[in-house]
Amino acid sequence: MKERKKKQGLLRFILFLPAALVGIGLLLSALSGWVSPEMFFLPALCGLAFPVLLCSGFLLFIFNLCLLRKRCLFFLFCILVNYNPFRNSVQFKGRNEAGLEERTAENSFRLMSFNVRLFDFYHIMGKGEIKDGILEFVKEQSPDILCFQEYYETKGKGFDITSLLAASGYRYSTRPEVSRRGFLYGNRIYSKFPILRQGRVEGLTGFDAVYADIRMGKDTLRVYNLHLASNRFDQYDQAFLASLSSPVADAGHYKEGAARMLRKMREATRLRCSQIQQVMLDTRRASTPSRQILCGDLNDQPVSYVYAFLRKQGFSDAFVEQGKGFGQTYNGFFPSYRIDYILCSEGVQTLCFDIWKRELSDHRPISAVLTLQQDRPSGSY
Image (cartoon, rainbow, N blue to C red; front, side, top):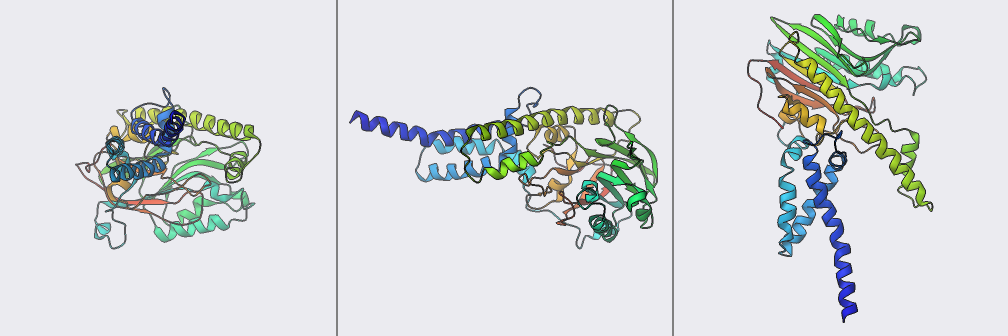
């Protein structure tokens, strides 16, 4: 009899352990916006797994509720403390540009952000098919301000991007960095409005953060084009993830692969925290226009310290204001999250937001119709 009770107790513990891990994971993910990864990395890691944790927590809540167990209250609490992360990740009542009457308003403009992955230069051996597709898409959409991340240009190999865009009305652009081989690369801003001043954030490179002060009527708008540190997963990491679907006899394979990826994520997450703090210092300089837009590839999901930090500084999220669905912007081998953003300071309102499902890069282009006003739209972390 005692032996049977021991077995039942062991079975209950084995069944309870995954549920406890889900609950703890949800609690830690709720802390990811408040605890810097430079101090403690685990909340950031749980934030990365937030969609899976949230779905698991909801199922466990329903299961325990049906059995009338008090444990359901614990999972309900874990779900409720993640209300803001959920609200920032999923939207139901957004508005896209189709049929938007405000598009014709005098003080409205359209901004597009797109990580073009060097226009696929190295993947297509310089043939230019992807480049032509991207430029055709830009011409079709015709945003007033265009922000490219991982931009690439060289006149000697058929990648003369600037002259082609100038023919479409983009008379003004920032100057990207120049490599030793003579090609242009980094982040670049194109504009149909005059650019009064340009530069990059102190302490960062032109591949991380550039800005342009753009004259719009009587107002000046500061646009930051960001590409924060990536996890730099390579073919070995992709092969490791692929191997998880088929058993491997060597347990050391799993340990080595997981440790490698975790190390990369930890280092990149901490670096992004440092980078965004440098950007925020630049936004507060006396010479910086008060109306600002931060856009680009942040390489962090909405349940993260970097995102929460920006929301606490008063920046509204165009997706949260007018987006729809889950907002996936990444098309790479890693799980698809929203890591590309358009964030607006006080005085810039979002009228609509779109994510374009075009397979031209490992990122999807995003755009928003915005307007300058005195009052900032509601919304905070």
